[in-house]
Amino acid sequence: MPRCEGLMAPKVRPLLLLMLWMLQAPAQLDPANENDGGWQQRGSGAPAAVAEEEHCTIERRADLSYAEFIQHYAFSRPVILLGLTDNSRFRALCSRERLLASFGNNVVRLSTANTYSYQKVDVLFQEYVGQLLHPQDPNSLGNDTLYFFGDNNFTEWASLFRHYIPPPFSLLGTTPAYSFGIAGTGSGVPFHWHGPGFSEVIYGRKRWFLYPPEKTPEFHPNKTTLAWLQDTYPTLTPSTRPLECTVQAGEVLYFPDRWWHATFNLDTSVFISTFLS
Ligand SMILES: *[C@@H]1O[C@H](CO)[C@@H](O)[C@H](O)[C@H]1NC(C)=O
Ligand SMILES: *[C@@H]1O[C@H](CO)[C@@H](O)[C@H](O)[C@H]1NC(C)=O
Ligand SMILES: *[C@@H]1O[C@H](CO)[C@@H](O)[C@H](O)[C@H]1NC(C)=O
Image (tube, rainbow, N blue to C red; front, top):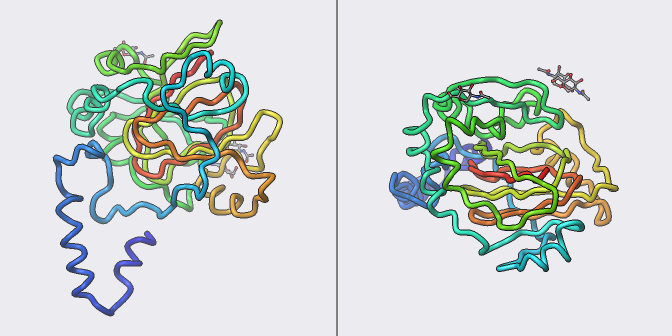
C-alpha cells in the first residue's frame, strides 16, 4: 500500500505526523459522516493512489432539455447530466449500514472484472461487503477479480430499487433496465461496449474512459483498468487519448450505443446504470 509506506517511511518529524493524524482521525472515524454513506475505507485499508484526470473532456450539462439531449448527444457523444433528478432518498437507503441491515443475508451474483465476464460467483451480500470489497490488488488480473455489478435480483431488492429515479430521457424503441453495483477503490471494468445507457454515481467517484465505436482502443481483455491506466494510458498520444472524466456522486453519465468504455472507481463506489436496449 503506497499510502501507508509514505506515512511510515520518514523517521523525521514523527510528532508532526502524529499531530496531523490526530487532526484527521476524528473526521474519518465519524460514523455519522453522511457524505460517504459509511463506504470509505478507514484506517489501514488505504486505497491505491490514483487521481482524477487533468482535463475532463466530456461536457457537463445542467438542466439539459430532452430536445437538446436528442439533438446533441443521444446518437453522437457522451455527456454528464446534472440536476435532472434528485436521488437523495435512494442515496440514504444505500448507506453501508442500511444496505447491510436490509440485504446482508441475500445472495448476490458477482462477475469477474474483465472485458468478457465468463465466471459468476454467488456470495452473501454481507460477505461481499465484509471480505471482497477491498481496494484493487494491482497484481491481480481482471478475470481473477470479483465485482458486484448487475445480475441483480429485482424481486428481493424491490424495496430499494423502487426509490431510484432514473434519468428522464428515453430512446425510442428501447426499454430501461437497471444494473446496481458496489465496488472497491481502484477497481473497474476494462474496455467493452454494448447498447446506450446512463450511469449514476450514488457514493464515491467513478472515472470513465470512452472511445467512439470506430476507434477500438488498445487493451488486454483480462487486465484490470488499473493496469491499463498504469501501463498503457501514459503512452497515449493526444490523438489516441480517450474522452475522459470523473463522475461525482449525484452526476449521471450518458454513453451512446456501441461506444467503447472502461471504468475506474476512485473510491469505494455505489452506482446504478440504466441500460437502454
Ligand atoms: C486470466 O487470464 C490470464 C491471461 O489472459 C490467463 O493466463 C489466466 O489463466 C486467467 N485466469 C483464470 C482464473 O481464468
Ligand atoms: C481471459 O481469461 C479467460 C478465463 O478467465 C480465458 O478463457 C481467456 O482465454 C483469456 N483471454 C485472453 C485474451 O487471454
Ligand atoms: C430472486 O429472488 C427470489 C426470492 O428469493 C427467488 O425466488 C428467485 O429465484 C430469484 N431470482 C433469481 C433470478 O435468482
